[in-house]
Amino acid sequence: MARGKAKRAKSKPAGKAKAKAKGSVKTSKAKLAKAAKPIELYYWPTPNGFKISIMLEECRLPYILMPVNISKGEQFKPDFLKFSPNNRMPAIIDPDRPGGRPVSIFESGAILQYLGRKTGKFYPSDERARVEVEQWLFWQMGGLGPMAGQVHHFKNYARETIPYAIARFVDEVNRLYGVMNTRLKDREFLAGKYSIADMACVGWANGWERQGQDINQFPHFKRWLETVKARPAVKRGMALGLGDAQQLLRQVRGFGWSW
Image (tube, rainbow, N blue to C red):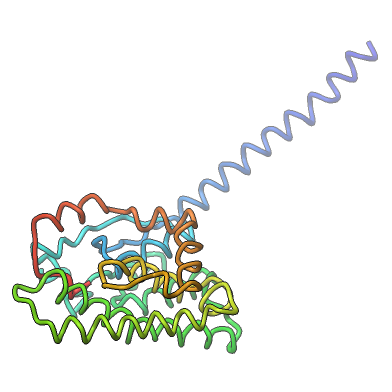
């Protein structure tokens, strides 16, 4: 009897606990379903596109891939231009905003900052730390990206060979990698801690060979590149749609500059 009573006494709270646990799971699922409004990512697998796919993967944000095939001129479609008026990808539409009004953003740097503010990740709130991130983010936006893009175009895609243009931009990218190498001499990442600045640079830096560079000239840069590329989220972000891009490279010329 005593054992029977003990079992009944135990089974009752257990049942309640189980019911409560089920209720909690349902509540959590309901909250998750309500919160999980995926971001629409307008994307093609290029160094600029990788910035955003990496950030989304790092933050584990739900997103829907909306391919923008730049070889077919899909970036010029009127519906796309409504929220990306510079006819460039990537762009995002985030429906998960207060009041239910979606937010659309173009320009990869602006998207990275937005996602950093939204999640509180990889973009510090402390002003001094934030400035460190921002200056290297804009260094990429105004320097590394455009200059490496010009190398890709004149060295690999231009319909005629222009030695001056090739030398001009290869030398400038070499200088920029030298700047990165010096910066990374005494720190693991560009802003000290891993941030959106590193995400902005890795896709472009990964093309060093096609940009006519010798990575062994930049040992700190090389170490940084290997470290960033080893991150699981970076691997996933840089693999997104890659098969489509490789097929495109075999078929199309002349779009490298718009990366």
